[in-house]
Length: 364
Image (cartoon, rainbow, N blue to C red; front, side):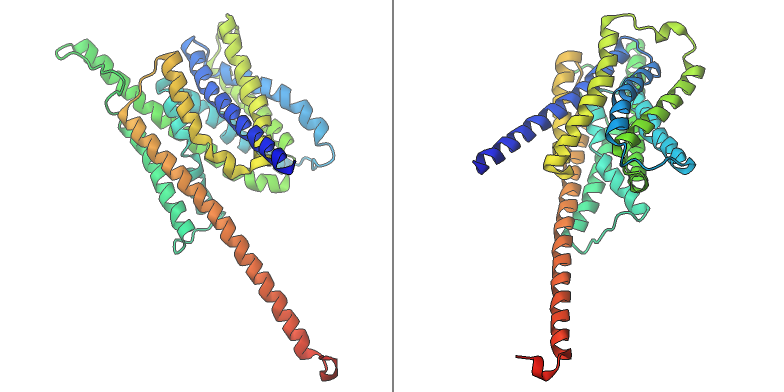
């Protein structure tokens, strides 16, 4: 009975992880569709964060009444900075990168976030590295592989893998269009690097904030609130045309609702449940599956092309991701064993010291 229950939980966890990655993959595709049909790169995140705030805010208010610490000016400043990195810069760079590049490479670049986070945490002395041990070397080599893969995607597009589409020689118009397309692709990859850097910075900054404000749902709600305010301020200068704020088709409405309900509400709930049941490392291992799903969906739905540089870069990023995750897991395991040995040694030393201090008549 117990083994059947365990199998059932594992089956549910695997199914939930697959649905989670499908939701993430769908977010890439739906966001690109929104940009293709003309939804503003500023209006889109405004609606997305508004819907996310309306979904998470009430739930956070009622579920975390007792554990939510009192607000201070210092905390509000920290929430504002978190929103600047995790919402405004993160989503802004992502949409710019997605506009110029493709959903497949946006997803591939995101696999480098754990490695970039590790570099930032190490620079701020929040993470330790012992290259004399295998796990320390694995983290360093994995980081180098991930960053190297992201660099290859950025600077080397390579030939298309599905069908060749080169400009005809002597056709200056086609050559000029091809050159502009390549330049836009490079800028798209640069924006996606900015997206990954801001995402990693958000996760690093979030750790000390959570120590002072452990109410996770409330923290997320405040981050969405300040991100919404920041995007509204940007929109006041960038999107002054009221027509851009009108939802003019069912397709536009679907993309906005998907971004707010699925990408915020469902994904957040699913990810929280999966981390609770399987742990953060197990959940992170499934991240590369998202890239595969996005590549298939983008090819079928959007007709996107696959390029050699992207495949090489994505492979390096995935190898680096697994290397960093293995290093972190092994480090925790070894650290736990060392702690147990230290505790055992301390108890034995204490017991021997008590025997030495005891009177001879008390020793059997």
